Structure formats: C-alpha cells, structure tokens
Length: 592
Image (spheres, rainbow, N blue to C red):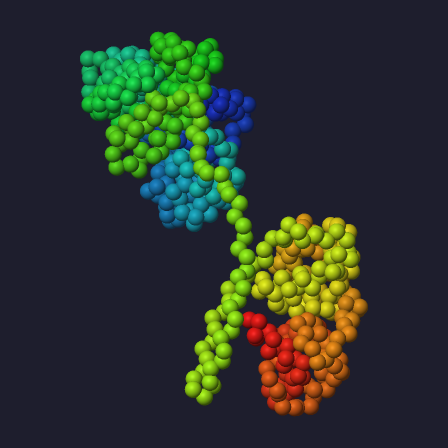
C-alpha cells in the first residue's frame, strides 16, 4: 500500500475521536439517539477543525448496519465505503469547482432516486460559499423540503457569503479552533503511534503555531519528522517554523529586566543569528508577557497558560520578580509593534528600538510638555483711511478702492454694562443691528430694521416682527445664531434663546426731520407707504443712486425679499430719490 499522509491516516472515524468540538459531536449524537436528525446541516469554521470529517462520521452514523447509531461499527460495508470515499450513497462535491447552475441541476437530478444500499443518500457540499447566487437559488426549494431519504451537509469556511435563505433552512454548527493544550495532547498520541520522538516544548510550539487547526499541526509534525527523524526539539521547531524557542523568550525577559542597553543589543544579535522570524518573536514575547501578568495575579491559573508544566514553573518565578502592570504595558507595546513591523523596511532595527524602549520602561506615563495657552485679544477693527480727493473725471477715472475685509464683532468691553432688563435691551437694540451689519449680515439687519424687543426674562428674548415672511426668514438657524452671538458678546453677556413673533406694532415710524442725513435703514421717507407705491406707478427721472435705500424700504415697509422685490420693478419704472436720501448715501460713501 502506498504511503498515506498522517492527517489522512489519523482522521477521526467516530464522534468520540473528534477533538475540540464536543458541543457539536454531543448534539449530533443525541439527535441520532432521539431520532431527531434534521434534513440539512451547515458546518462552518476555520480550516482543519473537522467539518468534513464530522460530515462523513454523520453519514456513517445514519447508514451503518447497526444504526442509526452514534457509534458506527466501522466494519460494515457502509462504514468501510465511506472511509474509503467509494460509497454509492455518499456524494461529496467541491463547490469551488462545481459552482455553476448547470452543475447544481445535475446534482438535483440524483435526488429522487432511492439509496442503493443505505438508509439515506448523503450529499456533502464542501466550500458551499463558492456557489453562484443562481446555484443557491436552484438549490433553495430542494434544500427546504427534500425527500425523506436525502440528507444535506454543507461545509464552509466563510459562512457570511452563504445566502441567508440557505442558512435559514439548515441547522448551523460553528466549529472552533482547537485549544493548544488539547491539540498538543492529540499530537502526542500521533507521535507515539508513529514512533516519533519529540519533547513537550516542541509539541506545544507546534500546537501554538497553527491557531487551532488540527490538519495544519499534524502536517507540521510530519514535516518535522522528516527534518529530524532521530528526535525533535524546540530548537528544531524554531528553525523550521521561524517561531521563538522557549529559552530565548525567557532570556528576553531577563534582558529587559536588567535595563542594560548593551545587553539588549547583544541579545538582538543572537536572535538575528538564529534566523528567527522577528514578527513571530514579537508575537511570542507579547504572549509571554500576557502569561506573566496572569500568573503574577493568579499563580494557580495554570490552565490559562499554554506551556509545558516545567515552563510554567519558570514563568511563575519570572512573574514574581515583575509587576503585573509592567507586564501588561510591555504586552500592549509589543502588540502594537507586531502591527508596525509589517510596514518597516528594516525589521531588525525596528525590533532593537522596540526592545530598548521596553528595557527603559519606568512605568511613568509620557507627559507632553507644552507652553500654556495664552489668551489672545481679538483683533479690533482698524479705522478706515480717509478717502483720497477725487481726480478730474475728464483726465482719468479713479480706480475702485479694494473692498474692506469683513470685521467680526469683538467681545464686549469690560465697562460696557450687560443688559439685565427688557428696557436696557431695547436701549442697546440699535447697537446690535449695527454690529450685524459689521459682520456682513446686512440682510438680517434689514429684516430687523423695524422689529422691536417685546420681552426679555433673562433667558429668552422675544422679538416682534411685522411680517410673517420675516418671521419665517429669521427662524433659519444661521440667522438666529448670528443674532445670538451678538447678544452674547455685546449685549447680554450670556447665551439667550431668541423667539420671533408676529407683531403689528413693530413697524411704527419714528418722528424725524426730512432734511437731515439718517443712518437708520428702516427710516420711512415723507409720504409713507402710499407715496412710495404712487412713485412705482408714475415714472420719474432718477436722481442719484439709491438702490440700497430702496431695498431697505421694500424690506422694512412692504415685508418682501430684497432680491425678489427689486426684480419685480419693471425696467421702465423710475424712482425719484429724495434729497435727504441722496445726502445719506453720500455720507455713507464718505465714511467707507
């Protein structure tokens, strides 16, 4: 007979032979005994944890001549045929190479036929997540209600890529990685059966190196036997797998405890000369510090440490000479170093620096020394320079001066009293409107030109506005925030909430003289609203430029949007600008 690899030769044949999956094997055994087997199962989990092996054992259990039984006889035609993979009533396919919908239909064509010898026809679909969505949908109805003589077992390492409609029609079992101690015991059984000489430390290294995969660990044991047929030691495992020998890990802790830079550099030269994979070294040292922290707090917690008994005793002695807090800090820094070393161009230099950092760990947290932040006074608005005298318009046209930068309002001066009552707030209301214009919020100031303070209780400011369109516009968040900022920094000295209400009395005109220059954007010209409407209907020549004043007047008196109302005036409609408005416009231009 030709040579057979160890993982095939030592493949479990009964549920009791499967290691590390008792939560699955016991459930299936009881289901068989109670005659409560499902028609479809989904086995998911990492590679090498026994998914396909358990599926074959289940096929034996339902077709054994002494069954259905949880302990197949392993002697009948069904048991021997399934073990040799030549049983007619067992169909095992690889979905990675049979993923198309046509191949799934061919599989379904076999389902109506009764079993040739056994009780059930068992279909094992390995790596079922590789099926196409069309193949899944083709399988869906049959998987939901198969004939009584059919048993489906789906196996996958990537269950999240299996359609939820498929998963919902199966009983799902999640296989787990086998613990290192249990896997090491299994490897010891195989080594003794194959007359392989290997020490316990080497077995534990092999078990820890494969993350709970039984097949990978058995394959490595077979490889080590070919590498060292006379006997396998921990050093041989380190050479073959690149892992760190236990003695070097213990020595690393002693070197770090000494705090000597020269000792660390000398140790790193030794590590580099052995050919140890530095990523594995950092990982193994991180795990070792984790074990030290655990044993320092709970010396009796041996079952949580994956190491041979003699090594655990050595760990306890090291843990007694170090604090758990320092061990945790070292483990955390090594864990981060394990991620960073993947991106470094010089792993040796990186690991040396990392070891030096651990050797100089004093336990004091790093403190960032920075100068205390200094309060910076907000910039004050600079006075605008006086306008240059106009040049002769016949000779040349004066260039347009650059626009002045927008000035943000400064915090209130220390001697400016904060408004505490509604009367004080009303007295400072014109100043608030002026600040809004300085902030570049002229449109908001225009909307509030004829508004008035209705009430103030120390927390809420109620502002009355004449037109509903102004209420809607001012309730926008950005407009309200600008006004709240003015109140907080220049008027009330604290955060207040602003509410707007419709108030017919908010637009009462002030008594002013018509021949003065007024800087009130809501000033009503002589004649009132009716006179303005009359001028809209009677074209008159325009004198001066009063577009801004007309806009203010439209907003404050007619309650419309500035941009829309200007557009509604027909081009041939001329508006006469009174002299008082001309003088006011000239005063504004001179001041700017």
